[in-house]
Image 1 (cartoon, helix red, strand yellow):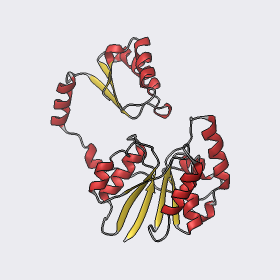
Image 2 (spheres, one colour):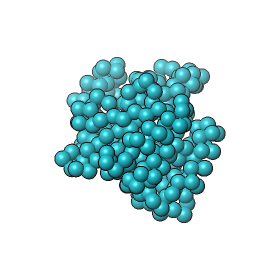
Image 3 (tube, one colour):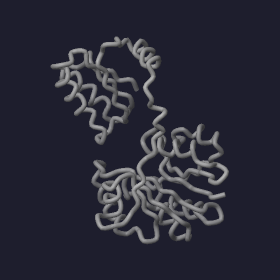
Image 4 (tube, helix red, strand yellow):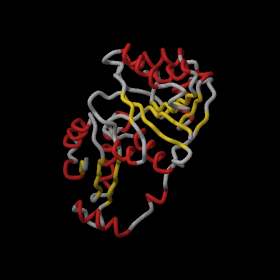
Length: 256
């Protein structure tokens, strides 16, 4: 059995967490065992009960922001060849790569998987990304990305990497007349309302404020248009305020 330690789960259900869940549900569990490394103090990873039901274990380490020394020591104790065969490191930036460095120091195989193409976080995050991008021994690490742009962002414009698009179970998105009717009834929408749904955390990358601008223009020709936002996040209050400022309060629903 190939023992894989994944890094990338947080307590917030987002893109990486969804990707890992889809992977865990469909992988051959007689060939691979998936465990998960996380460093969120006091909060369990998203979908932890579901992952545990598939036989996965969780390994918490002290967050870097609490103690750099303890974080590094605990990673060194955990990421060893006698416990794992591979570290699969999922990230949207290289601002924190200590698990990768621990795997390299231990002689463990490691793959860095880039899931993002830029960051709008703090200046510290951007500086650490640039610094670690130069210090990480990429020649000793497997490199994959969800897109060409994500690969260039993580590994550098001249680096080599493999693009592996996120797999989608298209059957899950097949049109269902009954589900459409039931959902519209539950939300108080008529069969004739022109409904737009946006699913995603309220973060800068999702750009819900632009969606509001689109809705405002659409209402000129489609008076029945309605926008449904599915998700939560730190910018939700700002988007709610913007919807009111644009006079769209009755045409926008926040479904959580």
